[in-house]
Length: 289
Length: 159
Image (tube, rainbow over the protein chains, first blue to last red):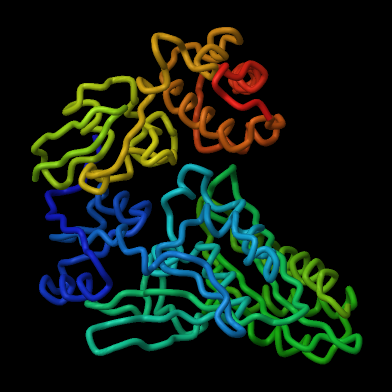
């Protein structure tokens, strides 16, 4: 029987209350969002918090909305809500394509945007989406809020810029008019973590790429992206040759480990092939292409 | 800590440790053994029940988090002594052998039909992709859910 070690539990009534509780209990406190990463880690004793601060009642962390030229996703928005969101699908189909292959429909009812970001699993799909879209996260503490780029958010596997006593409150994505986006993933079985996954978000104008965002997951890409491949493509025509060359550069920049999901060569091949497919479909979907 | 929740229309209160998982609260404290405790790792889906009408894997939720919410378990599907069509479908189409996965299949299947009254094979297979069955090979489960879609209860609005 797997069950968490003894732990205290308290429900936060607001973000301010949650911050006060975190401050009061220090580094032994953990926020409980969807719980679908934290509770399994607590069962395995990989996490041993002394108190859980449940933030499921915080409606201020829910909702998907457009603010100016950004889309804002609250930290407590579930995978199921991201999958079903017409706003996200209108601007960025990459969200629906990624969410369809995250876990299973029941897990998606509980897992959250903020939880996924803060868990920072190296095979996390939304981290790759966030890098491809050049998103930013908003982190709040007792002193106030600050914004961190997704591409500077991760300190390493399972480590982020969110410190003790802080809450990730929302994730923001700039709206690029006419952008095309796509997501590709290979997993061993339905609902599994990626062996490798790649996403792309591009704009095309005058027959050339005007912006390129690449997100790559599960193969140790720095900040879940491939900046050399992106820079290579900007200003170039969206031809098969250019995309293939960029995809190879992206794969070369990854540093996967050999494990039960596959050997290094296979994962690098996937990084190349999936980046190529994502870029190709994103380019075809971009208006003005 | 004292925890109260509404389970299948009845208020239930027990004093439990904060670490108690919802599946154990339902089975051990509330005494409702229909919800099954399977893999413990949110993979198998035998423990699926509804929290405020939405299916969740109850092995991966604290009972404390469910306090104050409305829980529906497999025991809550039957209405006025009459089985829900999803239950009848599993009988008609032999949707189970050992029966261990069945409560989760029923709760997910009912929710699927509530949101998509005429699902395709693919819709059903995607819908139950978070449930494991080691007996049937899923064919009869898919057929059972189709049966329920084709035989809505009288009070259901057919699509």
